[in-house]
Length: 109
Image 1 (cartoon, rainbow, N blue to C red):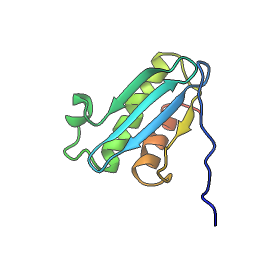
Image 2: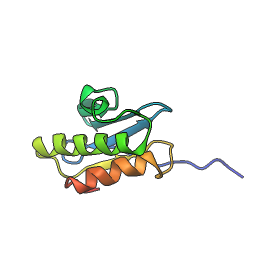
Image 3: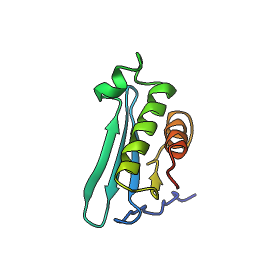
């Protein structure tokens, strides 16, 4: 059997890419405009805004907070359409929690 190839996900200035990286202790989210190779907005569990609200940064509550923060920051920039990039991780657990929190804030993807 051959290896499965993944389609490259690219965003642009009209519909940027929300890239998620999950480590064992933290979760990071950044919105990237691939046409100009610039990060528009970022948020992670390393920020004081998130750390002050939760004791453990490696759980679903922390991921939900990051999703809510990234959603509100994007809406302030008048961006409501994004492309979701979960990386190589499955859409499950903390990544799913972050995505659903961002959707509840009004993002479409």
